[in-house]
Image 1 (cartoon, rainbow, N blue to C red):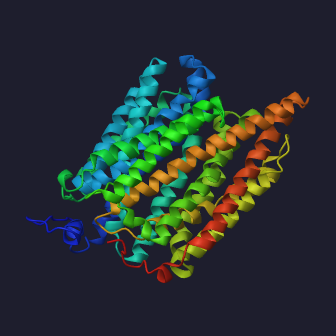
Image 2 (cartoon, rainbow, N blue to C red; image 1 turned 180 degrees about the vertical axis):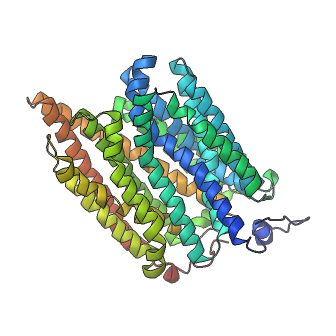
Length: 497
């Protein structure tokens, strides 16, 4: 899918369409390109979850305090979420292949720094660099898939495969993290990225066709980039700090207000800039706007479940790291199987909106079951049904991705991809912050009332699971009200320009 920029790009729509492919690439080359993009994304998503089960080992080895330990996760999340939108726009301007390869290379190099870290500061700094590289690669991946597969049915299958990799990687990471930590040591959870990253980068150079955007001068909104990056980083920093400082503290309210002020300044800038970083015309698409809003709610509940159920298995039922990962494996298989084998077919037959609604309904049921967990739960009776119902996430992820990218054309694909990934990360940060805070407060209250440690912890988790189910129910209602079938919304063809 080689693209060519004209010698003298015309202004307006003609220039924007200069990045569009003139003809589809052969099927084999497109499938190879999809495989490379999926491989890069697998490494990044795998690393995002593989760390969670290794945190106790990292804490013991590097002598982290409980508060400082969270920064091994937060540093990555702040950089990742804060730079997604900027990275997506850079991909549109200078070429998505360049940004993807550079991101994979930086992520791999930062993984090596994580693996050899001998102190807290070095590990946290390396995790921040991992977040930067992950943002660069993730922000442009969906944009490249959109341009690789312009035909709706092919695009649906490609997005299904991409969603499968993301969902499976998140769950498999916990299994792999537990096995590597117990069999070897925590350093290997980062060393495993080296062969994966080097292979993905080398294949990307050979397999991905070069694309040339109009260049930084055609749309380098430096002020807008500074405003949105600062707003997102400060916003995520504020959210992840609520577990320590509380939601109503002067610190949280003050930093939150400043983040909102920066966001308002960014939107004001985008409405008036000649070459905006995030063209506000993108939000004219009801499905693009709605899918991103639904995603914040849905990911809040889904990602919160992933973290909380792992804590329940370890802290209440006494599972080890490897056993926790294996207990979550049915959820990974269910999500992966639905994403890869069913989602594209169901989307083609019933439409993304209807399939998304069905997936959200399954997730509401899954989280609702966990709201009644006992302190001495039997895995097969109390947890396995939820793990299987979580397969609905495969329908949700593919449906949201299709709808969230439905209005993107070749010129804006990187920006739309960056926006979609940004709302995903904001949802993850919100979910973890809100649900863990609620669980901790409820646990403390039950402990003070004289309940045993297991009963108090379980009571906190039950409340968090109930709130997660409510978030998913709200996402279901919002999707039903706001989203429209693609044909009805007029989004089978790009409407944004």
